[in-house]
Image 1 (tube, rainbow, N blue to C red):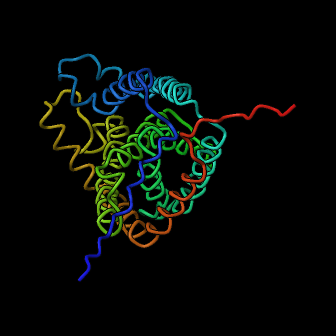
Image 2 (cartoon, rainbow, N blue to C red):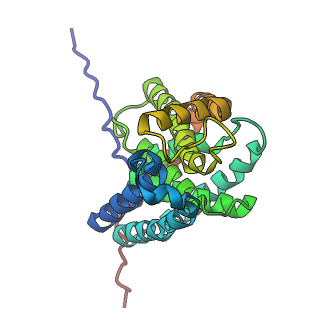
Image 3 (cartoon, one colour):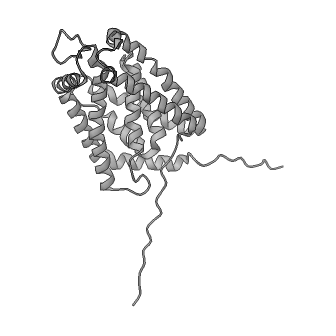
Length: 282
């Protein structure tokens, strides 16, 4: 009688094409704090605050977030020693995501770029995910003519969206159906979260006289929160639900093939392998 033993293949460590070092983490924390203020100021400022009097100036003031986003990307690239292979992959994925975004223009919820951001962030890590999300949204805005004071907040929200996928548990060992279900669940929730925060970026600038769901600078926080929930239900629930469902469907159907392709590309790229040069023979 013989005993047969099987050994489980060693798990492959998650690629880190862009590593977040101390400077980039500090810059990311700063831009995230400014972004939270940019999105949530209607709920952070008391009714007696004079901020409401300058509500129409807020989009341009928070457009300064773009400068901080550039600083985050520059710091992440400088600290990671981003090589030509990582730059090439970033360019390819950003171009693909930017090309996918206009496919659903004018059609509720058909936005296939979101599932690509989730899978890319999962495979390539949170640093690459944040850079990819921001660059993709910037490139798509140039492609579709969607440049405006809202663009920096879109870039930040998409950067958070893709970075969160890189922070999900089990990047080295979790594979198969369990991983797909987790990514699909994250994509579903994050698609709603993205729509909600972008609603917060535009909702305060509706005229309070035009609708009873508009932001009222004189109302207490609880009343404005109720108005905001009603605004989301009335204006964007269908779009957000469509985006979430499309992300789930594409993740479950195309996810295995895309994950394999991304992981194969990262193995061949060997981002973290130092470049060495052989001495020339005499």
